[in-house]
Image 1: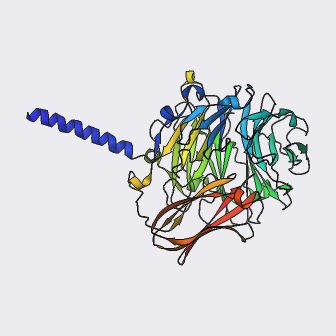
Image 2: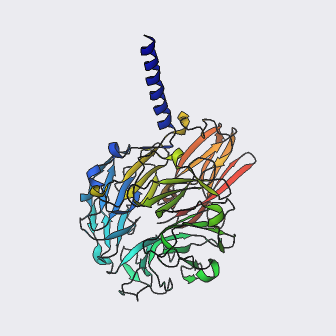
Image 3: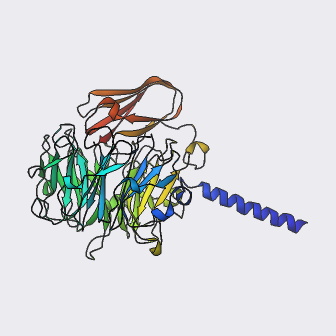
Length: 501
């Protein structure tokens, strides 16, 4: 009997231990239960989330390499079905995705940028989440990167392609800029962005010099670039003035965020060494406040021996600063998490955040609320085929109010405002905040000049954690940098966000 009781105790201890271990993660892997596995088995190059069928939840759009692109429709609870038949099915070499209302008819359209096939796929939404082919509206040329912003301030989204060598319509190396004519047709404009003599892999926009307009940062295979906006949508190459010297980097993705909480945007470059003569080390550039950057990698980032395919900023531990999530090559490399100490110095804490199954050669990471619980979930698009081992990954955030992880408490210990997600956003984003004390709370949206454009909250609120959705479309806001300011009593926090239409 004693032996039986002893064995039973051991079994219970093992079960308890396993349960506790599983509960230590901030995210749980729901790939097998929530994704159509046969449809997400590889070839993925980029991922975006958007409500393409106007039903109030976020769907998934996947760009695939030499395979038909994918549309995954959300049932509202974060369970997805493959409905790729909503778009024409080609097998081009899709590398990047942009989603925007190009024809301003109230629904979201899709463009896939193509590399080797040089055929950019352009699909116009009929209004019900089904799409018509508009490929003939864009010329054929090769590109790995695509970014959408309103360059001429007319309210219509324009296109910036990072050309990697084709000469149509611009000479090789020039970014391909197309101005929206107001009806989702485009006119080439060679005057906007200067010559880039390298291969751009990613393009991001942010107010890098604090003057209220959007500047451009190019992540490139040879030499990363920064282009400063003159305020009218024309850009000057200021790389050799604003950036440190050539770091011999081969960059795949760029992330912008204020990692040291000083009110300006810093830059994280996700680096690989596929060419054999480059630095593997990811790079962190710190903004001095006036748009000049210094390389602070050695003092702020861990030594990196991975080929980092993507890196994004997000406040994973709800402590008010931006942490880093990375995905890495090759097969069976984990998705990693790096904790910010509040001053922009990072240490790895992957084992506290992700379960061991969070493994993917992820060429794209997307953070969004997929199951409508107000918490940030993560989708990682996987490049390799099933035969090579792997699927896309879907990770759901575990509700911190349950007390699963010790770094969270049901009652906040401090007044904090989290970074909105997604960011950049179009047209809606989620804002979360913590109140240490009860009292009158206001949450306002300000434009780049500091003028109020929206008031989201003005009421008494009890101590606790809150989440609110901000839909810029309801306020008729144009693309650009905005600020959201939380005030409670004598305390105030302001953060920036980027609206791209």
